[in-house]
Length: 200
Image 1 (cartoon, rainbow, N blue to C red):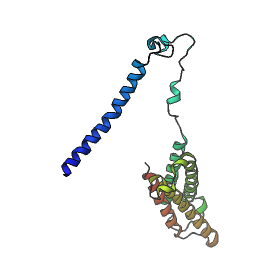
Image 2: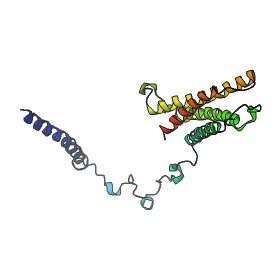
Image 3: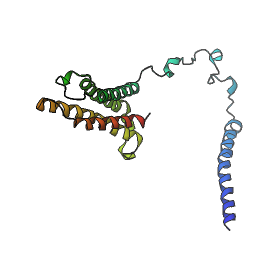
Image 4: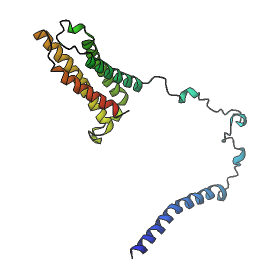
């Protein structure tokens, strides 16, 4: 019994795929053979075969190839390079951390790279929202790749910022920062790296 039902289903599917094609062909036959309006379509001025056969008075639009070429630098490129630069400055801040107390901490490569990392990251988030606003939809869920990219990138910048702020606050209050701010920087770097990798 199941085999008979399956065979009928296959026949119906086959008929369903063939019938629309036959109906379309029949409608074309009605349009071009049964209806005779004494129009010779081969000489009609409505046809534009190419520029050399175009009748006088009609013109073919001239669209330059540049209209279809990708610009050499886009908003998305700017977003991408700002994000990579932020990640690079975060890595430089990590490897240039002083081993001990540095009385001139605010003039070190470590501090300047850390500060630049959160500023570049903030610019990356801003340009990302500008260029990809339509890609972010909460209804797709937080684990959607685009949504996760936005969330992780933003958390990365916040981590970078909190690391710098924590170090500066401790430096101003105690004269030197503890290593506690490093955990916020490591978190920020991990979140930023993950945000970049999942959309690469």
